Image (cartoon, rainbow, N blue to C red; front, side, top):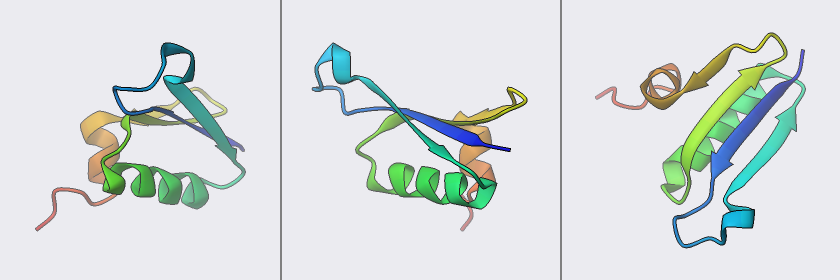
Length: 70
């Protein structure tokens, strides 16, 4: 199964460069990259989608990655 991450660049990026995507062959790789993107705070709209069309984004993705746990 493959996993695709899509994310938005910072708000000052040109519209043509506003959305980027990366593909990974394993879920743990995709989730690790999503964690990096969210941790830097430079990107917004991070989402992880698998071949079946299941998508994690927003609060659900942050909870899966452990964000918000204190």
